[in-house]
Length: 67
Image 1 (cartoon, rainbow, N blue to C red):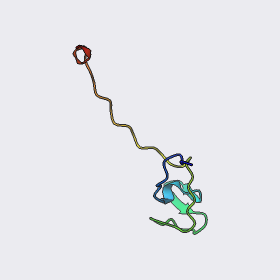
Image 2: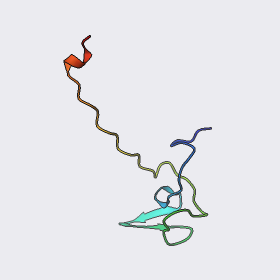
Image 3: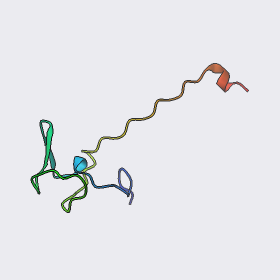
Image 4: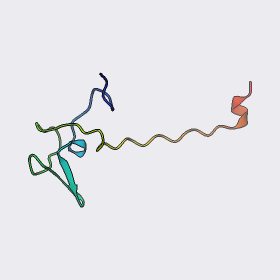
């Protein structure tokens, strides 16, 4: 079964179920301090993940659609 953002999700503390944000600081509820990289307690939470912004669409004029 395919996951929400694909099957190849790189672990990151920013979208881990155990990551908590307090003001501007983040910490892990399991390990205490926030680590960069892979953690054994990592559990993916798709709600915490923010999608990448889309590239702007190209502007076309009427001449682009004539044969």
